[in-house]
Image (cartoon, rainbow, N blue to C red; front, top):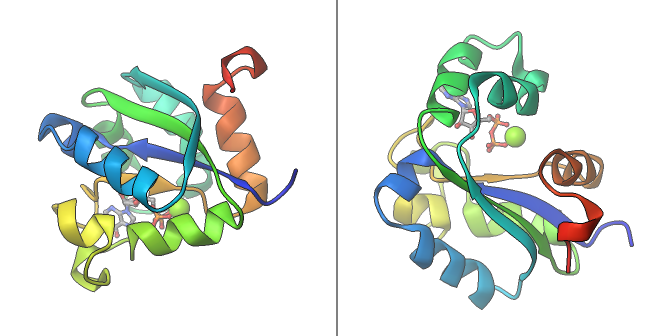
Length: 139
Ligand code: IDP
Ligand code: MG
């Protein structure tokens, strides 16, 4: 069903700081169901492919280096209005602008090292889910 999934990554900064459990708890408490999840380290090439839409942005190389610098947790989440509700749960890209109580306000370090990823559209949620998970890995 369209509109009920989103893809998240717990980024290397948050994994490094042992925040994985706290972030997953927030995600579950907010009503998201985990359909698929894996713990892995992206290669530079894989991180570059994931963020290809930002290829022309000045922060692209630095973002790719950061996102391949350590392990991440990738998860496919299910909930009604998953994309919009998850963006609300994580808060603004820059934690300085993230609403109090949001995951980025609580756990992010900086604009780049901002703890979590969330898909920005239903279309990208599907593309990003297919990047990480086969059908056999979804429940
Ligand atoms: P989003 O993650 O909130 O959707 P995007 O604009 O899609 O934000 O950017 C992707 C990621 O790139 C951000 O989460 C952040 O880690 C990083 N990023 C975005 N803008 C900047 C910037 O101006 N400087 C450094 N890193 C940035
Ligand atoms: Mg984005």
